[in-house]
Amino acid sequence: MDLRLKGKVALVMAAGGGLGSAIAEVLSEEGVSIAVADINFEAAQRVAKSISDRGAKAKAFYCDLKELNQLELVVSQVQDSLGQIDILVNNTGGPPPTAAVGVSGSLWSDSFSAMVLSVIRLADAVLPGMQSRGWGRIITSSSSGVIAPIPGLILSNSLRSSLVTWSKTLAREVAPFGVTVNVTVPGRIGTDRIRHLDESRAQRENKTAAEVEDESRKSIPMHRYGLPREYADAVAFLASARASYITGSVIRVDGGLIPTV
Image (cartoon, rainbow, N blue to C red):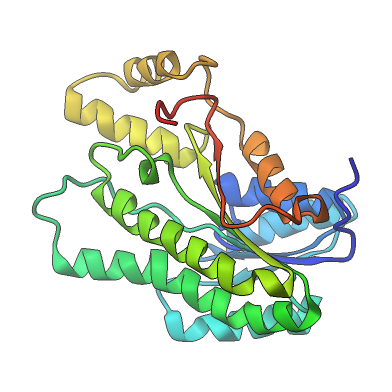
C-alpha cells in the first residue's frame, strides 16, 4: 500500500532509540524526511546516519523536553533544515516507577513539564503551518496505563491520560483544516524501557527479571512482546493520507493485552 507520504517532513521526538527510532525508520522508508530529536544527541545522530545511509533524508537535533522555552527554536531549526513540518510524533520518555503516595511535588512538576507541557508547546508551534497548508498529522505515543492504570506507574498513568483528553479536544478544533490528531497506545513492546520496568517489578516482588517477563508474556493473548517496528507501522499508517478520516482516536497496538473494551 502506498501511504502517499513521499516528500513530507516529520519531527519525531525521543527518536534516538526504542519506539521513537523505529517510527523514524519506518516513516523514512515511505519517503518522509525525518528530524530525529533526542536529548541524547549522539543517539539521535546514529539514527539519522542509519536512515541517511539507506538513501533517505534525516538530520539529528538536540532537544531536552524539559527546556520548554527552547522547543520553538527546535521547530524553527527543523524547518530551516528540512522544510515545514507535516507530521509531529510526540514521543516522550517515561518517568520513574513510583507508588501513588509520597511522590514529591517537584517530581510531579518536572514530569508534567517534560511529558505534557512540552507536547502542547510543540503542537502549538507546528499547527499554524499545518492549518495554512490544509494538511497535518499530530500523533502522541502514550501507554496502556491511560486505559488500564499500571501499578507502580502513577506519574505515567496520570500525566499521559491528560494528553488523551487534550488530543481529543484538539482533534475537533483542527479537523476543518485537514489536520488529524490521534493517540497510539503500546502494549508491551520489546524496548529498553520495558526491560527496565520488568527489572523494577522484579525487585519489588522479589523475583527474577526472567520470571516477570515470562508472566508478562503469558498475560498477552499473542504470548509475546511486540516488535518496535509493529508499533511504528501503526503510527506510519495514522500519519498517512490513507488515514485521513481517522482523528480523535486512541489506537491500541498491544497484541490484545488490554482487557477492557
